[in-house]
Amino acid sequence: KRNHGQYLSRKSQEYHKRELRAVFSYLRKVHQLPLDLTIFDGVTYPKRAKVATDDLTSYECFGEREEALAKHPTLTTSSQNAFSKVVFSPSERQEFIDMLRVKLWEDGTLESKRLFACFMFEASTGVRRSELAKVRIQDIDLEDATASVWYRKGSKEVQLSKREFILTEDCVFYLKILKRLLPEGKICFFTPTDIHVDGAGFNKEKEAGVSKRLGTALKTALKGTRFERVAGWHIHRHTLASMYLAGGKSQIEVKEMIGWCDDQIASRYQHLSRDRKRQLLKDVSG
Image: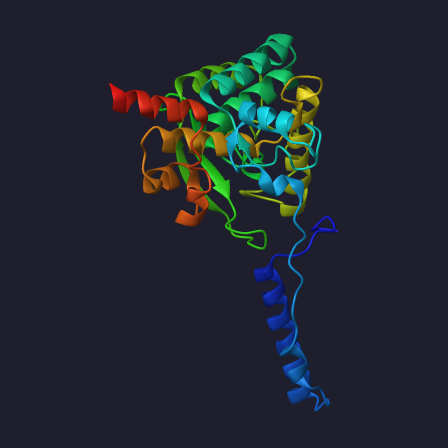
């Protein structure tokens, strides 16, 4: 179910084979079971069936993806995963922000303003949705325009680690207004409830539910808009990384600013948009 019916990657399949072989080896050695480990020697795996979305360029701009799909004979804009690996161009990003500002910030309700401020924070820092749920009011210094964000290094990790971020001026502007609107005693900036706060830390199980509701809220806000198909939070992390890399920042700098773990992940976002290619040619030609 976790893999949605698709084949596991070859790497994952090999890992599972090694783990199963280790279990068989343990049972044979400790419990003296007559298990033949040579059965693993001839195990082969089918290659993942090619699907139409494999032909799409990873991390191209949203508008370019729409154009590509319009020309693709077997795909539609509603196809599953058609927009799973895209970024926004600077103009698309601004259009997205302007649309949300009108729809959420000018709506007048606390929850809509909270969601917009949360988006501005994510677009400014590139933090993950799970990390947004753990941003406490005490973790943000609005005068210094800095924020501490708590995260776990892996899905099985219990211990929290901390990263520091510099906030943009427009992000600080909305956070200052939101802070004045929050009720006294509120702990977390971007979540309607603080049920996942556990003393000085967070309850991991409750935290997952609170984080999931952030995803649902953004999906609801984008329903019926041009950007309905990219309702996830992670596209803005992709977009920020691409903008940094296209702007000339090194992988080391971007990894430090956004919090990647290795160069391989950073390299995924270096697809050049059509606008960026034109700008590079313009710079060369003078």
